[in-house]
Length: 421
Ligand code: LLP
Image (cartoon, rainbow, N blue to C red; front, side, top):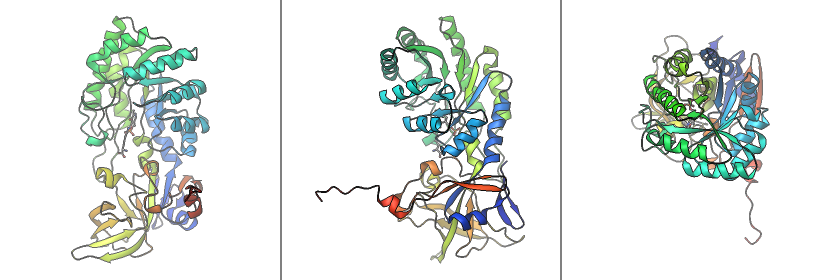
């Protein structure tokens, strides 16, 4: 469920007409619904209410500080994967004891930064990383809480670029080597083993792969405890998918997910952490764009928008589907026609959809890309020297620009020309 609905013939974001935001900030832009973000966070939070837990928002999916503050104030923790994300979370007011640090390539500088600023735990992904973290922590005279990310060798049945829990993926340590690696962790100074971490992939539309992975985590918990390791926290990762096509059957809900977590690991008495990104942020955002031209091709019509692959790369990168709807509600029964919906960037990959049925469109009409709140703005670039597009947050009947559109000068002036040129 989200808060982007037609009302009085126009698309609203909560109680604000999307056309009003377009008139105020220009197109293209991202718009987020605060109520949708909060609802999705609360769904997860309630689904895990059967025991101690912390929902750590995977801020890689949307890292605007206004969003982090909104969720942080509601009680969310954060899953960070870089020094930059750590700093952003802290700047948005999230305390270190609610930040978990994931990722396979943490540098010494990042470790030091997080230890100094406060950290809930590091999710360690390899032995070399473990040794470096140990020496950094020991040199600072502290003991840092860690989990080890295990790779359970489970097929997440999702797009290959976002599957992370199969043998051969670069993430975690093979579950078959867990005993050895936990043994190493226990022997190194500066580390305190507190739990196990797993994340098998993103946009999962079925609970079974999660169930398989979590069963393996449960078995491993018992085996490691038998060896004397204190396993009191399980970080179960993110990955629950969202319905990108509105007419499709929805993937399992956070409620179903929470029940499955209870069934698989509830008996262990561990504190549960999860790291959902997409399910919290995806349907909480739209990208709004304007039609520049309608061009008749030889065998098809092109809808040329002012938004492009640099603004929303998911269709070009993963062949991802986003519903694209007109901002002015079409009259009932209006015939649709197929369009290739494209951006102005100079490569054919800059195509959002092929042969997509849309009501007839004309220049200056506005369209909204649904489900663009996750992995949208955060993956954008200034390719073709197109300035990053603004982000707007709606809350009830108010809206605010939470990241302005840079001017051309601001974009251009980041370059420096050496004096010897
Ligand atoms: N935890 C870890 C360790 C992760 O690597 C990820 C996502 C998450 C949590 C959050 O997963 P989510 O709940 O959002 O599925 N750019 C791609 C998605 C990449 C996901 C990377 N890792 C896309 O646009 O589909």
